[in-house]
Image (cartoon, rainbow, N blue to C red):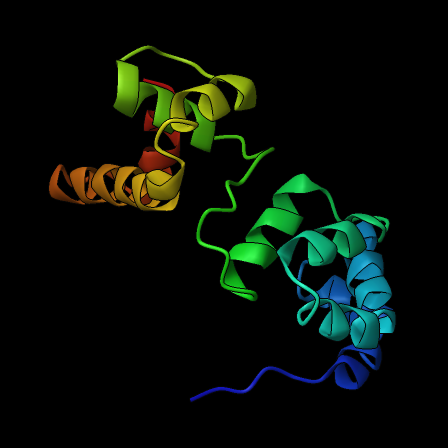
Length: 149
């Protein structure tokens, strides 16, 4: 079992260590900024998903994609649909309609009727595509290239 480091520990990471691990300057600055807001974000978990979403969007560097992923993974919001993802709208559009391409707006439109199942659908589509690529012996990088079908 692994325990993630505390916000204080993250704040002690030097610029050189971020650089050495391949984290660019803007992402490192966002992580440092989030660590400075850690007490407010921990309190946001108890005020509900809507309040947490508002607080996340107030932090520079946290956009819709990051906020949705945090809601899904850290706060247990299974229906938080990830907007701003490069591949997800294309994959959902292809799985539901067979059409190539897709946008966030089209994805929202297609999944509105099945909102309760949207997370299940997202995970199923990604899992199916990944297993298909594994069975056909494509490299994982090939899965990313295949998404545009």
